[in-house]
Length: 112
Image (cartoon, rainbow, N blue to C red; front, top):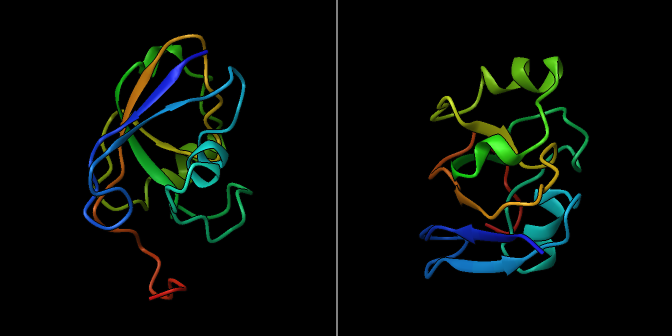
């Protein structure tokens, strides 16, 4: 079972964490199920960029991004070459390390 290593994020995961996630599982779902409350304003339907993450290790082991995901990522804050929408990432066989960017473009986050 691959591990997802989440680097520390001041609000969502201050200490960082390591999650055991079944192969093929959505990264966004895995984060939310393990109390890493990443934003997902479109309910994981690939219609926004609030679940944007940067894959720091293991990028090549993930499923390919779609044209729709690539188009949306152009609007993401802090875009990097290994950026993905976590709702579109399906875990592969390898461990991955992710960073959740400090900001999103969501101006109306709930629970604030």
